[in-house]
Amino acid sequence: LTIKPPRYLFYAISGFLCDVVQLFVDLAVHFFLHVEDPSMCWAIGFGMSIVVRHSSHRYFTFGAYVGGYWRSLGRMYMGYSIIIALSTAFNVAMARMGMPHYIAFVSTLLWTGFVNYFILKRLWSFGGSGVDKDGKLEKEDTSSSV
Image 1 (tube, rainbow, N blue to C red):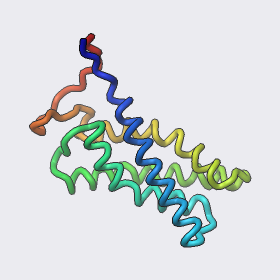
Image 2: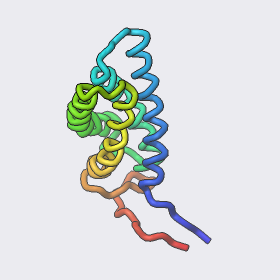
Image 3: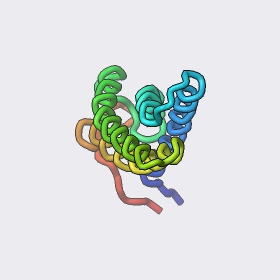
């Protein structure tokens, strides 16, 4: 009996762990560096968590880096830069509506995780395919074998 869970499940677990890292960076920026702007804390925390996200998604979700570590990390920063800009703008809007800092953090986090999966899936392998243990491209198996 073999069940292969969907890739998104592993992405969600990996992403949650990275969200905790981002939260700790946000808390440090807010409380130790005394940055009061929730959107600035969000952008700094997100930007600093990308290296951790990159490694975590490699091991939990997408497999080996296509094109090597540095090229893959560069692609991830490029892909995430769009989301950092959009999510920071969303966070600014939430803060201006009077939403407390960490309620705005969670509400911003909820939609970005979902959107990031589709961006990263495409960026990781230049087209949505995974890579096998030898680093060769393979098509994602969406069926479950039971």
